Image 1 (tube, rainbow, N blue to C red):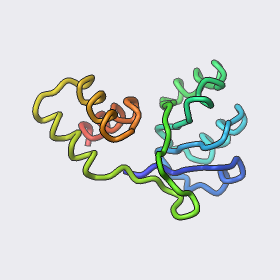
Image 2: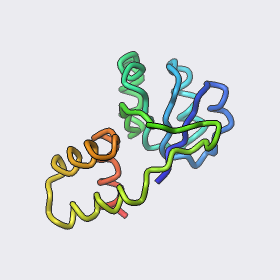
Image 3: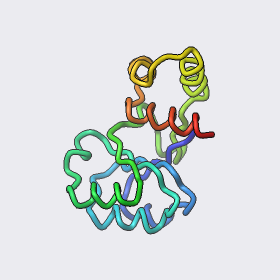
Amino acid sequence: MKIRVVSSREEIFTLNPNERIVHLAFRPSNKDIFSLVENCPKIEVIQLPKSYRRTVSKSIEMFLEMQRIQLIEGDVWGHRKDINEYYRIPSSIIEEIRELKTEGKSTEAIEEKVSRESKLNPEMVAYILRKDVAA
């Protein structure tokens, strides 16, 4: 699974329209979020760093909710944008989530364990869990 890292508002207009998960590494305005949703109609998740997540307006939160787009707080630890524009979630983490699910662990226990061990945000773990179960 890969997350497209966007480090400037100008980059929004160059994104592949099929992007599903995007991490915004800048403080987005309402216009930036609207542009992102318009340019990427298949988007499912927008991830923002904690400090930026707190500044998102209630109207944008409601807009994203109506579009069924998740707004997640989190970081892409150790990612270098100059090397690769995508942050890849290691397949080992996805495998671990699958194993814990087949062992019958609760969603909360899986989120806690995986996020503690992998530095992934619990919300992102929950998203992976939902997508993987649906697949």
